[in-house]
Length: 273
Length: 68
Image (cartoon, rainbow over all chains, first blue to last red; front, top):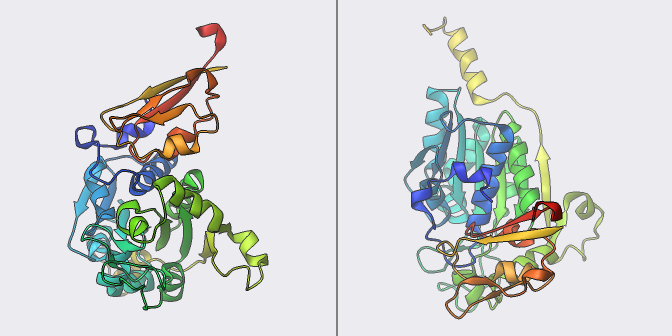
């Protein structure tokens, strides 16, 4: 019964502290399975995370890990990648960490096309601090800071990443576990800034406030509302109403930051290696 | 084809995701808030429970009849 993905976890730190039914565990397993699929060594892979429920993941993963300042995971990761381009750098962040507190760093990471794989666990709420509305809380959804429903329009982090210059943008959900693993693995393959939005359920803060039912009901909601990209493209505008697309939403080719910086070094007369 | 279900009780938080996705109602959450096997014979070894367990607490292995 021993599973090969267990080798990527710090066994003495499990069970993790996430609430019963939290989707972060599912997304964390998808990440290590994607790494396993790629055959990356634990000594050559760095996990960088910010602050929040999602970012606790780095503590459970047996790689070189860095738990950084709120919203600043991408700058730390950029530094690691520039100092040693041979390392594989994965960033784990949450919806608030990535699009609110670290929004600026996020768009500039995309713009520079640094060779990172950023996995954003999107639970639509600030779970750790008690359920405040985050930039991805749907309009009308309740939160402790929005008891009559959120009025702020929702960030689509995938569209944001695409517009800012990321070269691989994908979305998946905790229900579609194998699909999520594949999307992350494709992101790891991409040389440049890869962004994967992993939709995860937060039964404690978001689910309870919005009467979403049990954790299993929240997973079923994802199953019923997620539409694969190919089918999404054929959907009419009115049928898209309460649905969202999953799959690889955008990919392109562009020079990554390491290569661009090497060119600068070249132009400046080279450096001692 | 038979299956073997292993539950790591220490890790289980009793969220009930595995029980909800089990097509054969093999699992149920006990009074103590941990998952338990209630109908082992019905298990078809599909692995839906293991796939979505957020706590890596349940594992299903298929066992060949001859090996038993």
